[in-house]
Length: 110
Image: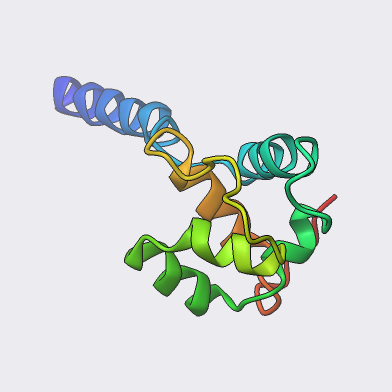
C-alpha cells in the first residue's frame, strides 16, 4: 500500500511539472507581434487592437484555416507582405495571444 501511494504521488507530481512545458504563452505571442510587426514599421496599430478585431471563435477559425498572416495584413491595411510571424515556431504563441485578448474573451493586455 505504501509503495502504491508513493508511485501515485510521483506520477501526479510528474504530470504537474511536465504539463506546463507544452503550452503556449500569450505574453510571448504579444512580444512576437510587437517585435516583428510594429517595430519593423509593418503595422500602425498595436497588437492589442489586432487581437480585439475578432472574437475567440473567429480567431480559432482563422488559425485552423492557416490564414492568420493574411488576416493580420488586412487589419494593418498593408498591401505589401508583412514579416512572417506565424511559422511553426511562433504560430501557437501568436494564436494564444490573439485568442486571449479577443474582444469577447474578457482579457485585458497589460
